[in-house]
Length: 238
Image (cartoon, rainbow, N blue to C red; front, side, top):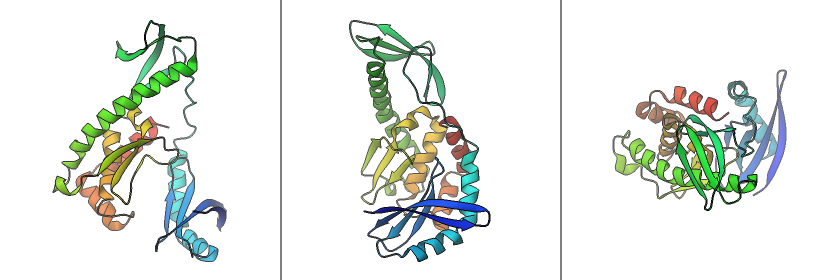
């Protein structure tokens, strides 16, 4: 798989985008939450053909870039020190680190309590919090998947083979060709309404691999307020 970076001039705008070439027949364009533009193209697609496609979609691309611009700048990276806040299911919890004879993490009285055998080491605190968040994500995402499937006329037809939780830098989730639901681990910080949007969005990809009109028709039918949920997601995790 090769990656290249190209630019397209549209009026006064310069659209900078990455091109990923894969074994496929169609070309797709995505504008990601961090305002990166990605084109996935067939291996034999010429640069001229790709530029033509990008220019044809330029009004939509610029509109999406403006949409994501409202959520900048991003929240500063967490340092895992006492007193800073961490998101869990849409709410902010203040981190409290306590020296302990064993390691433990739990929510208590509106705080994220961490008992640590190495309380002075932020790297250790980070590991404990991230492990706890991952465990909660594994439970919560499975619960929400079952609820989201019930939105569809026949829930039996939208059953992924597995849920995979990963560190994704550019996407909230995806549905692989092998029908595995991949979710970004940071989604555990979002509200259940926002998590449900991502899961439902990806379940629609079981029937529609691309963001076609048919895809959005299905998403609208099963989740009429998906746009509002999407905005809520972007604001919560900005």
